[in-house]
Length: 233
Image 1 (cartoon, rainbow, N blue to C red):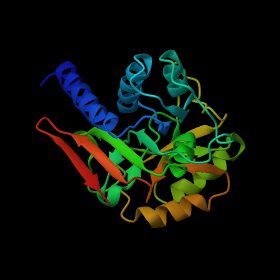
Image 2 (image 1 turned 45 degrees about the vertical axis):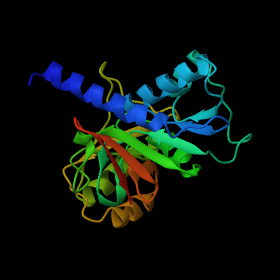
Image 3 (image 1 turned 120 degrees about the vertical axis):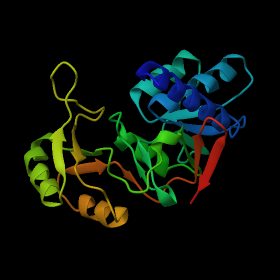
């Protein structure tokens, strides 16, 4: 299968997962809108229903891009001053391991994604079957850091066994998050104990947040060519 056809198939599967996630939404809900390609499909599907007045919702977005897209469809947005919890958040993931342990942040939005997920009564992951893994870590783990601390955090991550690299943009400049921080993409290590690794990362001064999402997801909707697999913890 060529690259283009494989990409088209993945896009079709992501759309199927997003369509299934829309079925979880009821009028009156306050939703968390995730980031990334699969979440974008979901936002567009929601937006069409809002535009046709088939659905009445409010939302908080996990990225400026997702909020901008939602506003284009007329989705009304609130903030955490107005709304302390969300009924449902739907988001994608870079890797999905047993017990719904996740790596997220490939799109650079991991801090806000984790904030939104933490405020959600139900957190649902959507994706295609390529996201499933037995152990996390083949996808580089994103770690968001304060710029001043980047050299120190890089050393600490190297001592843990990672090979950290500052994320760069295609134009050669450093990638800057919505909050003005840097991201270190950490490769070269499969994570046998995600909880223990998360605790080590949390203890490093200068780390703002990391892409290990543990004990947060309630359901994963994973699209295959034959069906939607529903995985729970």
